[in-house]
Image (tube, rainbow, N blue to C red; front, side):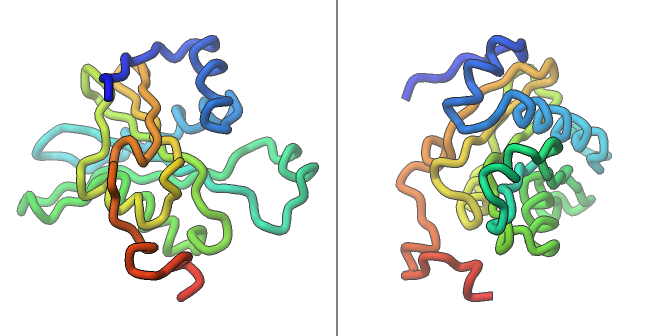
Length: 181
């Protein structure tokens, strides 16, 4: 796979990218804002590497198409990296956001439409391998993963591009683990 080139966060680049991943420009902008804000909440006294994550939730299953269009503010759950003096004990922003969403019941009631990650890096940074696998547990392989750098330049890849030949619930004979509750 060819290395994607980061795009600046202009109206044109967001508008061109959004339909490909079934996101409105407003949802894309909300993810950027939420992930960037979450980054400011990171607890990273050792690495000083701030990471914020934002999950875009799908509409409740009971909503009709008309009601979905009326939903002005998308529901987003955020997380930030949380370090520990014992380095391996820290938790990445993506896992914090997903854990929070699971505890709040969103994995069963709404599902996840997109994941955004914002860092202070010079180029957009992808989730680590552990986070990719964690995301795989709760997101469809076609879920867009939007990665922002410190200037909000971005790259969007599907989860299947970040985790090819993935291992997930279906490999264990479970089509929808959320229903096992």
